[in-house]
Length: 108
Image (cartoon, rainbow, N blue to C red; front, side, top):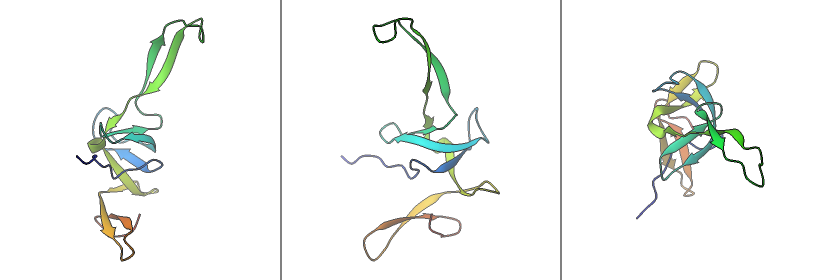
């Protein structure tokens, strides 16, 4: 059994293309390949209550990230115009995989 793969990686700039946050952009904080989720900085933050414990005797609330489905985001290739693209891979002669933009064929 092979693990599923994501074409979007940590540090990429993405645009949300579906859902409640449609049109917003942000940087990828981390990804979860098994659940096909992408965690974007500042998007999908929710508050959770924390019970009092020895480490946190008062309890209270904390903010956590909720992941977005990988199909709801697109990679931004042009920062100024906020143009998005789909991603593909090309195998070089050295055996290295290179990410390319499907529309233009340029390396990313």
